[in-house]
Image (cartoon, rainbow, N blue to C red; front, side, top):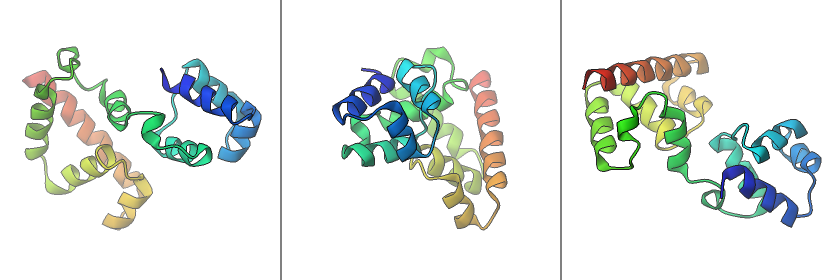
Length: 148
């Protein structure tokens, strides 16, 4: 079952309209509709809020690995999409060859799913700096995959 279908099912089981769920999340009803039709996907932070509203585990809504892979899929060649350990090995190799701060920021964002604001506070930098680090690291990742 897709994430949008799971959200729709949880919402209807709780007898909530899209409008009511949107109000609880402080977002638009249109965004709920886009999730449920598969046109968009909520980020992991929002999934955590949805899970809290419906008293379920986030894993009941979406697998964390799916969120990470979805975000990084544009940087990973199709040949790595088979779920094999080769992707893990390649990522480990890539991460071992970048500087410690960039590696830590990347891992905190994509493995621990930490909010950018939390990462920024930890490094005493602005959120825009963390976004820039992540953008540059993803570019390096794309280049890395082109070279191997």
